[in-house]
Length: 118
Image (cartoon, rainbow, N blue to C red):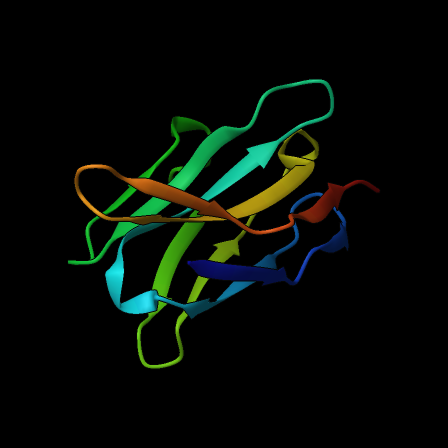
């Protein structure tokens, strides 16, 4: 079992920065990958970025060059630095952790709201 708690959401003006953090607890030694997903109102949850245990990162095309995902294993946290925010980035952002190989178990945080508006 892995527990995830997000923080850092809020209201930000277009063009501004925001940093999301996710604290993991429980069976953290077994985490293979951590990710951030976003769910805009009325839409499904979509992958924003992920980072593997080895440090490989990947981003959705819509956030490349603006968002950076990072992981601090010593603190058991994963962060998402969001720069040059746009109104279309408005969404509830969820932290995700994947554990195991076969099968893979997926754990989710409760989500944190990010609103980009003037």
